[in-house]
Length: 275
Image 1 (cartoon, rainbow, N blue to C red):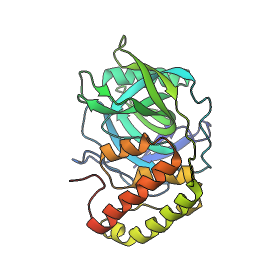
Image 2: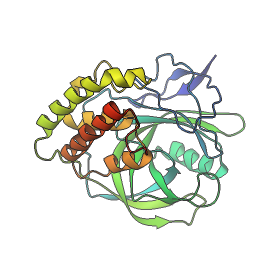
Image 3: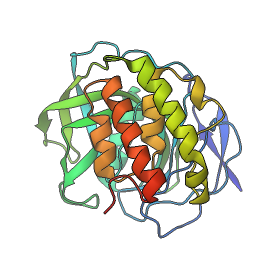
Image 4: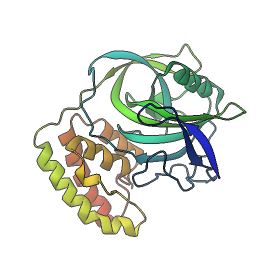
């Protein structure tokens, strides 16, 4: 069964088809592999909570990742605190049905505004107030559908990293003044990217045996920056490790850390950062 959903990754508004999603007790599920929004999708589980149910989180790199524009510029963003980390050029699908976040997403859609995805430091997603981490990712809504009861199904794409400068709690949902972060390559990024590619290829058999898929058909064509985010978004890891990768000061540092994490995942057979 499919449902119409509007939006494409290049900003055009067309009717797309998105399959119905089955309920699942899983709290977080990653949809592995490269997909376009207008391709058929298999059922993806949802997170079972009242704020926003995750329909999937997968790497959707279809273009070379460029340096963030206006690094250091300050803007105001609505914040969506989640128990999940969004990386630039990865996608996050959510069902929104808590009233304050329906209001937030409705405003973003009406004004063509992005919002910020931030990992929760303290608090819960459902009701109340959550304290977010200081660094998050700007998210642009690239597809949306509204149900008759007012809920939204959206697909958002990660764009630029930001740091929270000041929190504004005057609305039902959090807003913040944020500054966008530079994403410099750092020393030896090309060599580190080549080394990570080799490490990924060596880890693929053990990852596949566990049901984890880290690569797609174009993963090794990515430049160092895009590769670092692709691996970060798909590496079996805890949210603490994901946040650490998001906060890395440059691409080279992220690539180096990912290579180290892959040793743990490959040899020990546990998620990176797990006990």
